[in-house]
Image (cartoon, rainbow, N blue to C red):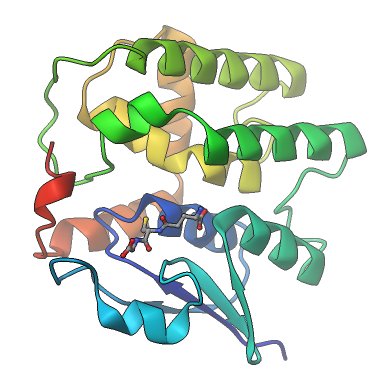
Length: 215
Ligand SMILES: N[C@@H](CCC(=O)N[C@@H](CS)C(=O)NCC(=O)O)C(=O)O
């Protein structure tokens, strides 16, 4: 049996950890998690011991180590081809990858202004320039994908493509950002996932505070 261990950061703050975690959990892939909290100013030295980039998430598969959230989702999708981590149709899979890469390389205004913080009481910030442009592009992606598939998720059933946007769902909610009704429907579908609830419940129990992520 393949043994998968996913190293993650704090559930409250670690948006990149959330992505592969909810992809695996939401698609029923068995794995163990090891949480290394960001509880030191300047980072936790234990992360460097396990991860060549000094960052999480990091997947260990029987001693083979892999970093980068999207690479982890892709790799596990190959290990478990029937788990639904990636859409079955080639064009859908290509779009899922394009969306995931947009997430990885873009939306910096939103990511910088609104760090993921699941414990944050819902309240608005004065949003700097660029944030609402990022939100508009994300809403367009979600709208186009869901009208193509029929929803409720981007490619019909929950997949790794949704996982790549999971922290954005939390940000839109916690920073009370104005979004359209269909965006709210998608957010509700994501938040109703048992995997979402499990991660969020654990995040709310955490007591570590990372001041730079408390916007
Ligand atoms: N592009 C990477 C980003 C990973 C990343 O930035 N991880 C953050 C946590 S969300 C981290 O480990 N930070 C620790 C540090 O910088 O000390 C991915 O997609 O996995």
